[in-house]
Image (cartoon, rainbow, N blue to C red):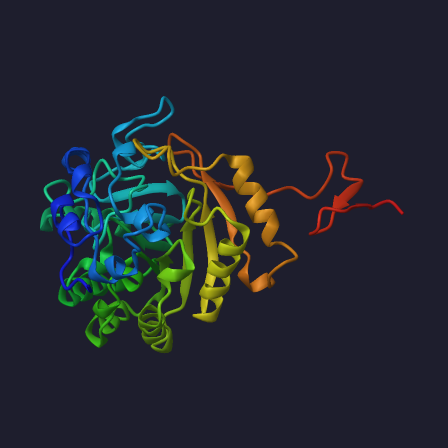
Length: 345
């Protein structure tokens, strides 16, 4: 049965047939610690008869989230260490993250900000906090790009988003505004003409980065929502996370990247999972990720090749960690199929 409302508790998920009632005690414990929500679009994609369903693994709470591994920390990529004012993360010289809200349409079970997001936690910036964040940006002429993240900025109303984009438009040295979001994939009905108009309000170059991890997420409705933005002149990029049981298969990963390209979304980042608390059951080892990325090279179009990246713990930034093809002595190189070749004749 199709859901018509967002499911915001394990009990609601059980009533919808998505989780077994006998699991409720553990899942309520998870929900007491981390936010839970599954939109109707996502719920309709989950196969309740399959405990390993790749959509369910991303959004349905699991008892394994109650276990914290030794290497897991509350702020795995060091946002707080690089936050000079509330709502700003300034890790790189020419760009900042601006988090107008810490609310999402749905909550990923592997979120690296899971200790901070959700209703009753960070919420949205107050008017004074937003003023201070925008003043920080306006005072620093080296800031070329502002990345709206969260939470999910596209849960904001078109009116609030329009006002924010208009204020960013008045900062001359900001040339690019990027929005990181799940909304087109989990709530495509929110991509309305009013919201698209709000995104264009700044007059800057605007890009939307879509987070999706499995090809089944790119339904016809989702592709249509993305087309509405792209046809309005807003280019789109992809962001995905390598997840055990979701996309840790060469064929599935290839289908995901091809689906992005077919939707006119440029594959951008493929993330190694961050060590957030209670996520070890979904994380792959770095070598496993490199092998998966290597499997794409030579098999699918160059248009469909993402950059495999790792956020260095502690706030030290993002680095590419894709497989290497050049030997240490730089005299041999492997082709996309793993065959070595001499470079010195």
